Image (cartoon, rainbow over all chains, first blue to last red; front, side, top):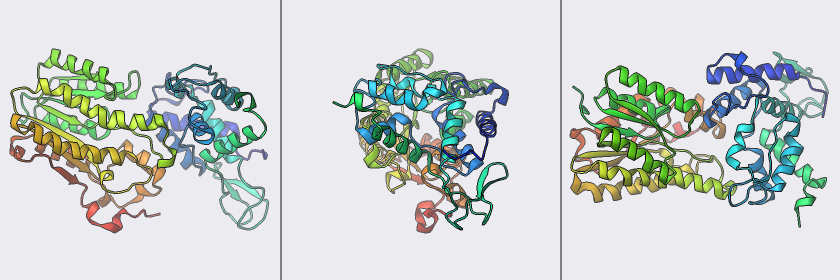
Length: 191
Length: 257
């Protein structure tokens, strides 16, 4: 990953503001590890609102789909969630590898219904950081390596002023999953 | 003295958006209201309760009842409560909807089940449970559809369920005509509700379409109220397009980026 141009603290403040404004609650109520759904009362439409605000803030595209949806689309239905709507061993392996550092844990047999409640402000910060880290080494418009940050939020070419092209959140997740499979992360789950 | 005085109305999915405006409009027309919402413990519940409280303070009877209409048992429990508290139902507005926004190739079995359970089966469950409470009196059923029933929208499998329901509207209207229960659909255009937040994720620029591309929530609610009035008793099995004319004009539908 390249050196971040926008600090984690800046992203966290934006996440806090987005949640506060979407839910119309004081920002102080938003702390890094509170469950958006369980602790703050977020519903799916609110999450879309929060994501939209972050997209405007950073000129990014947040994921439209959850990690485990991507797993099923990429590796086949039934890989992550069994026919009783419970998480499989592979889902747990993938989750822990990708999101273990955010302090959330899942276990095999857990209901898929319980998974969205694991999203916290910390998860959103991680997603934004990952998307921002997809800026190419050089500006595709002028070929210079002179990324800078405009208005504290937008990664912009210091030479020609073009905005940095960034992967979408869904692309980031898909790429991560492809890499995880390529480095053998799933071997214990494939017959 | 509103046109719905003395009547009892259920609006499914009425904690937010269009459902909320329809519930308020029917209440202002004199109806007693059941506000339905899906999810316990979240913002919908807070908003549903706040709306019920507001309607009560304005002098009508109103309760908020949690039920996921896609679950048959939950629907039965909701109607049991309606029967116990109101003893009747005169107006059923099938407004609740919930769907994955995905392209056809991405739909998992789970997505398909959610699509059919909430947007098709759930409406059938509600009608089945409502009929005994509508016994012996004229009644009105209004289904809230969308232009997605007739036109392709990006990543919008919900449109196929809306089309199925528009077909059922005609079936039900015919079956229930003898009982003086009218059944109609309102096919709405673009709304500035939470649904627009979803739509703009898949249709970039939709929020920048000219104001004339959108239809006011109050205008839609007004048509629902009309369909629930005696004046509309001869309108049966129709799906009325209420879209501020959007679907007449091909070029309005193009995104302005």
